[in-house]
Amino acid sequence: MGRTYLFSEDSNGNVREVKVDPKHLDKQIREERAAGRTPTVLDEDERIRFGLLARKLRNNG
Image (cartoon, rainbow, N blue to C red; front, side, top):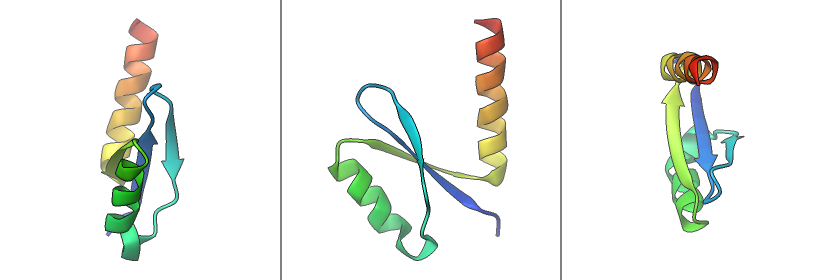
């Protein structure tokens, strides 16, 4: 199994990466939601695809 990434977006659109504790991922997601942030969980492949998509959008925008 690959690495898991947790990203959290606040109401201003700022995104930060949260260090993942695999045993407590559900709790981390609940805490992010309770704090008014939007959590997104990605695996390694999804993270790469989203990164490439973001780069493509930046370069064509």
